Image (cartoon, rainbow, N blue to C red; front, top):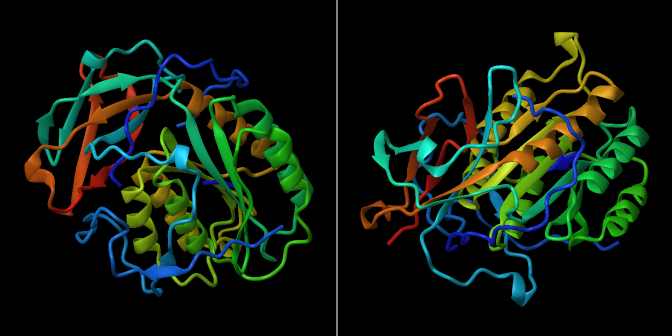
Length: 346
């Protein structure tokens, strides 16, 4: 399942607690917005790619903004860069008692101030990308039911989720809503998987859809990760996703222990986009693992910190700037967060 600007402002705190299973975190109408030229920046001009992004050779276009409700648009022009961070100890258990003073942020190697810290009470806006192409037919019904259980366990009244069906085209089958039954009905309406897989285009459309929303922006991908028909290449998709401040979680289905039957390039791309955006990759080998992956995503979202970084004026260069985040007094703790951000230009 794919659960896959001014920048967004900090969301209000002290909302009701997330409902989730107690698990430790690990390490219809078709909507096809007109495509934009992929050579242009998504909004905050990101002309200089991250140095460690892999080279790819595919083609070029992306989705234009989808119309959104007036009340959901963030209109302040603050240069806030949100930094969602998951912190775990040596046993892989989440650490939830840290304070602002415990974190140290470096941007391009230089020590920078952190403006604020909030907890997982910050609302989540998530887009779930569900691969419905012909490459994924095995265990389809179990995947659908695992997704249903995920929505029921993770979605709070302050959160909203949207659901995309991904095949030759990307279809928004359920716009952002906090109505779980609407999402369940949309999942149950999926027909027999068919067609090609335009996964990169779907990720880009979801990132553009979430870009101007307030709160944590999360894309969850449920797919084997293989792209066969996108107009966009992977590098462009990754740049747009980073510029939209989206975290990506991937549940990579259809895997085999036989390396001859695996698409290693697809696996590397899923590893890259989740690592760069501060999400996580799960590779279930069976039905029980699939359920566990969704449980772990829910637990991760429930335990996150959200840091705020305000770039100085000399950072308005349109380029990519790398993040290094660590816990100063607890070297045993491991932090997972986004690798950097694209600065606005001007």
